[in-house]
Length: 325
View 1 (cartoon, rainbow, N blue to C red):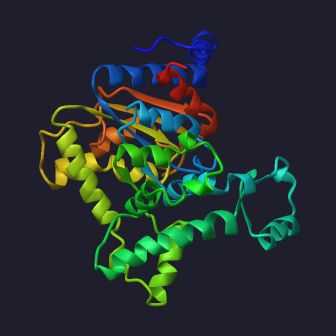
View 2: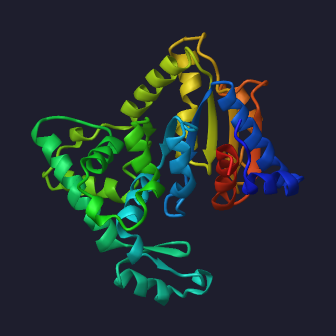
């Protein structure tokens, strides 16, 4: 167990009740999972890459405190956008006051807004498109097919982007993941800027859809990984936000149990969700963890935590505790 630094000491001393207490409980249980030799999946929804979660998540990856990541296509690409175009981003603290005309002016300037942060189209999106197109085209010409994140791994590990870095590369979680070659699952990748790029090339006939493996391939890869890893280690589930990033991978356990009839495979050994989704009518993102018991995803004994708060505040604090900061 890590010797705790000032951030960890602060939250232990001051976070005593309500969501603050849940944060400490979840962080301590996360650490207990690692001490027991268990593995951990982290899922990223929302815009956590644009929120620069890499400043803490990359170190979690380097220190083997996260072993597999599921993320949206947006989080996959936006970490790289920030890596190569950070100096061109525009921050708008008064975003709540923007008029429709203000928003239109941002569009005219080729800025795409994510809350208080605008991503520059030319310097970020189009710059990365050039590199991705090259590896897509190469694979297409060879009749090869790869998963979406594998193409990103190719361009990051080639070193071809290094002269474009505008942040310290140690703050890129995707670069850290590529260097460690940890598995990444990206369900619904088509719902992303780069997914749209790829689709446009398929529509024009420049690329073939078969060059990009799909969500079915991701679920198959996850099922294989889960079976192999769970033979020697239990696996925890740390969910940031809701949506497909969490919904997709947590289903692998009932798939293995109910569809493949592999009853010996253990359930998830830990569950924590950071979310501002409230429990309401049919909202899976806002469902309490016990609902997952009825779907065969968690057991009654699984340590379960919900932290109802802003993930951009909470996740770095949990990671700081686990890292001993």
